[in-house]
Length: 226
Image (cartoon, rainbow, N blue to C red):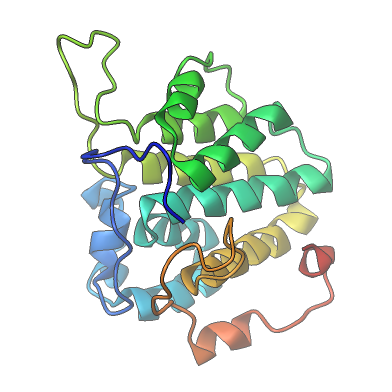
């Protein structure tokens, strides 16, 4: 599908990485280098995501957000916030989530500009709106003095939106929730659940046999959500 108003030339729009790319590259899009676990940075993303999914789910979410393309990362965050909204948590105005999803579908700069004008009130959906705003080629309000966004900032905000929205989930449900969100991210990495069927060419994902073992059915409520 060809978007009617693509954000031509935006340095913020990053491509998806390969399964064997270093985890430090994916995580470097969303966290400061000093925050990357020493035992993870040198691994391939394929190996690192399975390890993190078991030991550090929040870092696994950051890795997935960084590994995906900008468009896929924001879309995955949309899916995650929608799931958390279904659970009953307050993510902010659902209408904003709809706008973000529309941007993913169309990549229309008019939508990105509208989202950039939102007040940052701490709502998690507004954090995701900021991710979209950071995809523009110029984030300066003064067109005569353009400022290009730093590559990766949109990915970082997408990860923050997911992590922030999942934080209020009670302890008894939080780990199953995070596992579910990671599972969604692994699906999106395999070009599943896209905004439009076959919206992008298929690319190899990150799911491994070890990841499948981690995410075996446990019967928790998250697994039944579609």
